[in-house]
Length: 309
Ligand code: TXA
Ligand code: MG
Image 1 (tube, helix red, strand yellow):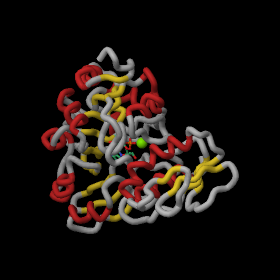
Image 2 (cartoon, helix red, strand yellow; image 1 turned 90 degrees about the vertical axis):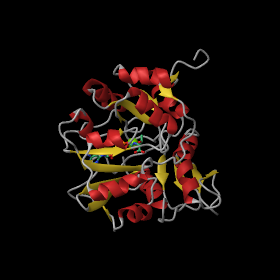
Image 3 (tube, rainbow, N blue to C red; image 1 turned 60 degrees about the vertical axis):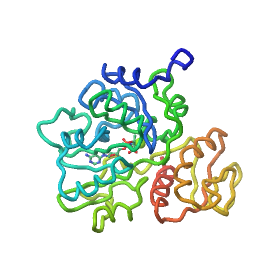
Image 4 (cartoon, rainbow, N blue to C red; image 1 turned 45 degrees about the vertical axis):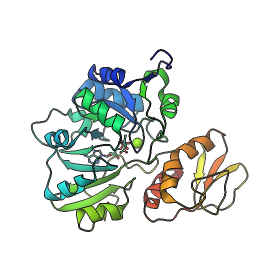
């Protein structure tokens, strides 16, 4: 412990902080989460104030195993089939089970809860050691790029938020979110699990949420995931003052995946946007990304990054 900078903590220290109602960031297979004990209203409130997050935007609860998840949410047969993806980058929005120990600050007063089991040993060990589910949004100020390394979390929050270092995240883009109502499933947010994979587990078509639809992820604001620089999409060349983020044959300053591999591109997306933004360019131009597989999640994040602020 002695040679670690003060913001970096080990598993036991992280668990002790969380158990005493403090915040601690932790790694998952998708991005780093800003964690708090999901049963502690004060602790969860601190997530919103630290991130500057609107209070109407509910949080995802992370469980160590299915037993913990079943205490919190009601699982329909369809939900059970999709939970076969766990541990993994799929968040299920399910009816909250009553009575509940989860503070209503987590759900922003909704009668549903977003829940997942992360596919990351250190994350599950942390939740199991704390012995309570952890509420955790991505560990970035609201509207900014999500962190995929402990160093990026430290750059975001410094000494205000201790972080458990698990190295670089495997997937690099947030979980897919699917809302379940009985035998109906709707994808609220594209993410690290491709829609085709979700549909094969569900054994049926899974619709995409329409803007303005009854079920929606309240956090899906148009402008989000924004670097400091302006972002321009579908670019193959640069305008004056821009740097180019490439993909495949479009080379660029950095390239999301020279081989055109969408999984590799998802993993690199936030890190490379961070790296280009650090050059303080006037703008970041991004090469076209196909809309297939994880391309859906990548383009979703890029459109939000490029949206008017
Ligand atoms: O990969 C991830 O999902 C990461 C890691 C840390 O697990 N977490 C993450 O959390 O991306 P966050 O807070 O950035 O995004 C949570 C999304 C928001 O869009 C929120 O509106 C939606 O989940 N959400 C949470 N609970 C919901 C509910 N009950 N109904 C509808 N949407 C919900
Ligand atoms: Mg986020």
